[in-house]
Image (cartoon, rainbow over the protein chains, first blue to last red):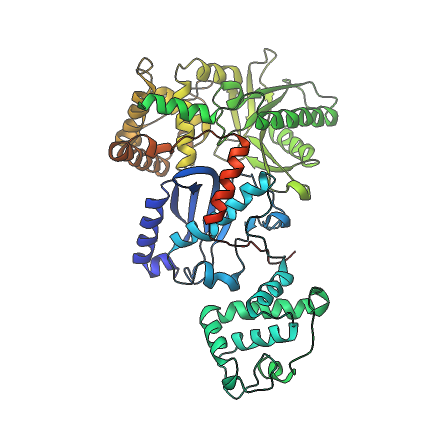
Length: 240
Length: 300
């Protein structure tokens, strides 16, 4: 089963909301996969600044998963520097671990369109005009993940970051486990509240994927780190 | 502003002059494409010409392409024995410089080097072979559909559209197709517009468009079009099946409802012309209120 048949009310609601706001975007079901296709306008103060031909392909587990976004007009080069995957032309609008801030799981699709998708294409237009990326950009791959967690957790310590990710990816976090911050305290006496909050925001799957990417890249790939070993490895080894 | 003034603004905003960046880029590619084909098939006498919306005067900025027909002489087998061979040989030739996407009888050219991978150059090369020495009718290979061979005549097509008297309506209909993601082939849409407006050439553009959409809304199921270059030979019904007709009818109804409830501006939006510096300034302002969202890429 797929989401539009599992939850026809959600499909109807999303379709009505999106088509009311964006009359040039249309829902299409092909081979049991839901797509939104059409002309996506960049709107500012009621004026259309630009338009992109787009296709959004929804995963079967929408709204849990992120849609695959493609610019179908052949306008944006399929290039890493433009955040479009050269292999399949998919655009990487956001880093999944940051989804909670931009388009929380379960939020209506329209929020994605007027939020991160609009910002993505606005940025593309500005780059076309020779402007810098207006909201900055994450580095690619594991470096971007590291960059994100460095800002989120306010540490450059790769070991601390991977330990946090271990805790976010774990099925449960026990209070007697050592705190990932490396203080030596038990987590219940230290950053338990922060970890609980992050576990509510970042899915275990996304945390696991990020952890895998960081481990695969290793510290050599994370050259920007100013690592100082502050946390013992024991915490991570329990949950790896 | 009247409906016709509005449509006139819409068309003006969509026009692509010969000095536009888009047309200049296409012309540059056209020179490269012609050289590539001629150099590779130097033993073949080729007729290479512009066709499509550039030749018909129906180009729109939002969706444009340049058709380059590339026909070999009748009886000339140097570029390939069969039509399929010619098609595939041209595809191979163009593949040395472009990413080539087969598209019916045409070959769509896209960027293939890392800097412009995926960029659509809006160029379709249409290989074919003249049917005889008069160099009028030509056979094209058809990669999809029942028949592998399609008989056509470029000049008949061009004249049919250019002399239709409804060029502006065709341009509006083409923009409408893009905005509504309607999977109707350009030529079939052009034929439909010309046919449905046969008796409406003297009325205003807004009246033409209302008539066109009303006909589609009410009678799309009965709509049939004929290829003027081969009325009995080419069956265009496969390009206009019942599924597509339903989509056309639904989109036409939606458009007429929009005009009725919110006026013409609801159909294609407000038209604003901006100078480059003003445009950048507005983009910057838009960015200050947009959700700050940083793009990423899973693997570099």
